[in-house]
Amino acid sequence: MPAVGIVIGNGNKEYPGNLTTYVTITCIVAAMGGLIFGYDIGISGGVTTMESFQKKFFPSVYEKQKNDHESSQYCRFDSVSLTLFTSSLYLAALCSCVVASYVTRKFGRKFSMLVGGVLFCAGALLNGFATAVWMLIVGRLLLGFGIGFTNQSVPLYLSEMAPYKYRGALNIGFQLSISIGILVANVLNFFFSKIRGGWGWRLSLGGAVVPALIITVGSLILPDTPNSMIERGQFEKAKTKLRKIRGVDNVDDEINDLIAASEASKLVEHPWRNLLQRKYRPHLTVAILIPSFQQLTGINVIMFYAPVLFQTIGFGSDAALMSAVVTGLVNVGATVVSIYGVDKWGRRFLFLEGGVQMLISQVAVAAAIGAKFGVDGNPGVLPKWYAIVVVLFICIYVAAFAWSWGPLGWLVPSEIFPLEIRSAAQSLTVSMNMIFTFLIAQVFLMMLCHMKFGLFIFFAFFVVVMSIFIYMFLPETRGVPIEEMNQVWRSHWYWSKFVDADPGHVEMGKIH
Ligand code: BGC
Image 1 (cartoon, helix red, strand yellow):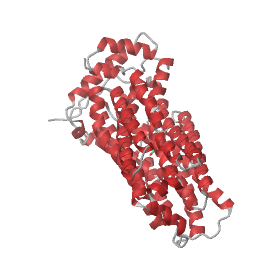
Image 2 (image 1 turned 180 degrees about the vertical axis):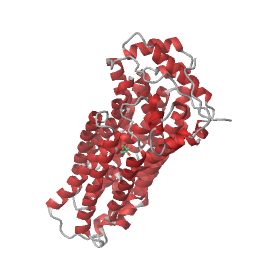
Image 3 (image 1 turned 90 degrees about the vertical axis):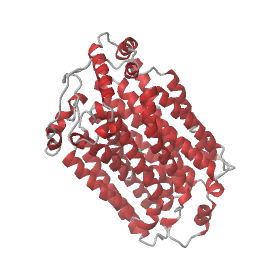
Image 4 (image 1 turned 60 degrees about the vertical axis):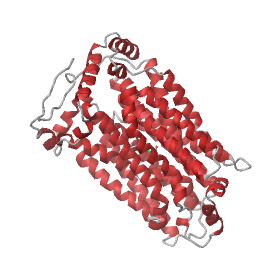
């Protein structure tokens, strides 16, 4: 049977619509889904450096740190259970995002957000009241299940709500709330670690209940997307809602395309198998490589373990947490830069500039740590200026990530998939991201112990590989309507072979 490609709409179209207050508020509330993801990323590193927390749950790490002045600094924190605490969440998220893709399709985006919020509340409470390691791990698993649901549904919700022209900026709004979540977590860790009696970690972990409640309540009051309504046959209701969202009366074009889109996706029985067709090779490649590369930048080494890392290079516990706050601030600020620049300078420019900047700073950090710590990991007394230089280069690195691979790692996949494979390809993107986040979280401390400062060279190597990939294989997608995206592949020096070579490609117009 020949493969049938379906092209919706008639190209070159711009739907009328404004950035209404209604849609802005709706999107801000929905983007809060990113907060819970960010809060988690930021909280675990700080908590694992709190002495009272270590003493209670990971006494061997605590003892090793306190008493062992002989062995290498690089290995001070190497503990499988400590890393499992951080990484278990991403394994759970990986499993649940596959389930969530069905729930989101069947019961709507709002429902998935609600499920995510409730699971997240449960996980946060279990963690806050934990008295044993298993409670910590089960709590993290629940948080992970929650994240799988929200990360699947929130970006979809945002894209469906956003007016066409502002989709890019609103998509990065999700990344912005991730980075705000990380920052808030870092700041809270800083203060909570000072609580006398050493129970501050309970507030840090339990505090996740706040963003969880925001998204839970948010999901109850948010309107359904018109797409979701159409999927359930509520055409008139969807039209009325779309008028309100866009702030204009004439939404016929868009509503027709939404109906067509919904019909078309119902025609596709096996979206996953579809993804394997030759003509989708560029999309499949991007869905796998972009999220994997995003993690292979090594960013989560900084996000999860900045305080641990800073302690390793000789900062006291307090200074280490403070430095994590500084990197968190840089992360938020640079994300704002990308919101401003992504539609002006283009994706490729940001990817490539970010790659070069990350490479330089990673090599500098490796050289600085290598020079002082050598391979045996015993630095002697470290001057203050030295630690400051290391933090400075880490900030330069974080800024580069935050305006390139951070937001674009989510944005680019979401804008290149044709409708008929969009949901499956998006699930694949989220899964790949979670797999690599898990792997890096799980093996980082072990890698630091064995590869020492060479660890930074390891990530620098991947930054070179991914930059070459972008240069050679990723076409510019700035200002290209999603329905026109096929053109971009057709005119690409390499991918055109795949897209054009499909003899069975049949274009269909609107479907009613
Ligand atoms: C990544 C996360 C990362 C965060 C940092 C996100 O785009 O997916 O893994 O921790 O950016 O801001």
